[in-house]
Image (cartoon, rainbow, N blue to C red):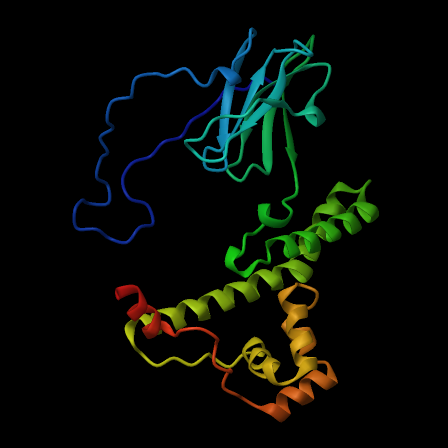
Amino acid sequence: MRSWPLVLCACGRIAFDPAADAPPDASCTWGPWSTPVLLSPILQSGSDDYSASPALGQTQLYFQSYRSPSMMGDLWYSTRPSPTGAWGAPIMIVELSTSDNEQSPCVTEDALEIVWDVSPVAGDLNLWYSSRNAVGDAWACTNPSAGRGLSVGIVHAQLLRWMVRSYLDDPAGFARAWDEGTEQLVAPFYWNQITADRARLAEMTALREGRPWSPADSPMSRLASAAPYDAGVFRALLETILCLALPQEVMQRPGIKDAIERLGPKAPPPAPGPGRQQLLQLLSA
């Protein structure tokens, strides 16, 4: 099969809120192209390099090259720390390399799926597809101020070990089990952190605007409320923070559940150090 790259473009407004500055079918006017610039020398070789495909917000670049060591068409990639950072030395995608020529990579923006052409020594081009699993921060990022990224990543990596052990020779079964296991065992930590972030954002907004605020009733708020007054509840809270257990799990333990019901809603002890108003006064002094 011979394949050709296809680029689809569109103008106007699609699925956006109505705007008064232009009708929905308004035409677009493109500005002129900037002066062409040769990409970093570290990406170049003495052989042909072409068919580049960016991904992950222009921080990864996939391309075809005839460079050494194979001097045949292979797929390579380079990374950089930011969209304006310096490119790193290209790395060959060894697991996709064959004795034929691999060319024209097309990578999804999340860099988890790739389609490319394989050109046999004799015969027509054929399209091939591959995918990979996202683990830890590559799957979902949480608020870095919570310090849970490594813990969630370790939980996810442990799940990956279990899945590979059970489904190494069953790619379809692996994909289904990986998705189900991720949603059951890892996703709750992510969604619990999102809930906590939204509650914290609401609290900070209320404090900034001088409005009263009280946390919504939830398993985590009840657990956090009782933790300063009961050692067992405090240890259970640490388990949830370190991603050893979910709040929904520890709340069902008889001792924890009884302690939380006995203590009821309690005001948190005063935090050490100056409050917001005191801190503002110190800064303005």
